[in-house]
Image 1: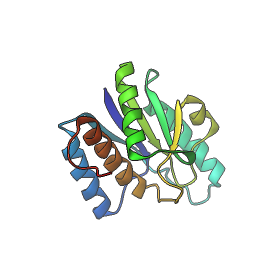
Image 2: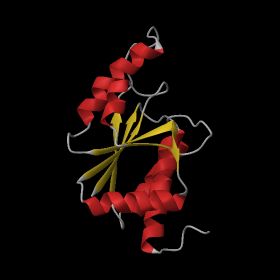
Image 3: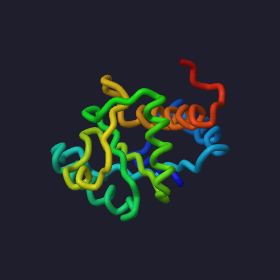
Length: 157
């Protein structure tokens, strides 16, 4: 199985990119993880949040393969512990799907059409994170989950 983190907009903070690259490097020994970045909508300053979400919708849906299993990262989703996330990933791997896609929407979230395609909606915390920061958090949590599943010394209870 391959994990894809699909995110709207480029990450402009160097420290976030450095952290992401570190965890992607670490993950290579466990599972293939890649980022797909949907470019920011050009000339979006005059658009309402709803208009922006609708423009991003087409780009998000076009970037997802039909057979992909999709998890939306959303502050209104169900929270999981790191162990529960590891168990979720393990169950997805056992089913044998080719791709598991974590969707990180733009600043205003995602459209109802995108929500219709998801299999699960999870929250990384009750706290709200920037859509750039959540990329680093999710890749670290995927790494943590993989070390839990393999029994490697990273996660401490």
